[in-house]
Length: 304
Image (cartoon, rainbow, N blue to C red; front, top):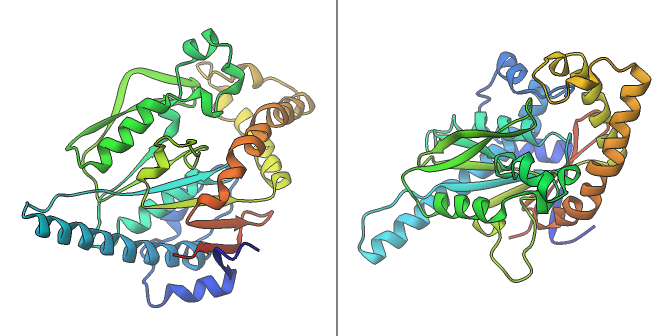
């Protein structure tokens, strides 16, 4: 095991909750849970509550440091958002992790405003991907407008009063033209995406602006199964919508749908995981390792 990290079992990590009160209930967790995920209130208390405590300590310390610096420079204290990156594969549970952290962190009095921005909004529109012949590589690093994403995160970290981010529709499988979401100096911004921990070979990258980062990890065989299970569930729900990009899959037989899902994983998502996402895991400040049932079996915290 890499000695750059402190490793904790499920129970060891749970003990670091200390006296932090649980601020969510079963109803809250139900709303935060992703498709086919089994995260429970107990899991939130054991895994994510200690993490929220750690992050609260980091955010408070960071805010204090900025105040000290502004005092030294003789200027008014500026509000600088604390940025947390959440990385990991398709279907591993990044979005649920982000939502749970948002819910917990927003209940700490020192930082009530917590925004989530997904990097999906910085994908090139399908028309551009088609023109470049890389529509089947959506999610790979080259499918993102890296300059726009970098400019966005830099502006947020610089304390700009308002910063706009484009919006992505999973139903349309494309950027929503003319639609943006506004980030207006929140206390914390969670940036969630597949490739947010990518390196830049000497140039500035998005993760340079992160104060903390989380990598959600699991064995590829488990993630592949979760992806296929999610695809099969969506075939009976979202894909039924005639406006859905994936509506053509809604009438497939079970066996045909399974074949499509496994092919997509093996040729796109699994390939992206191996080539681009997994190699960035050790760059995270904290790695959350999941078991086959989505429960967290180990937490690894990078040594400072």
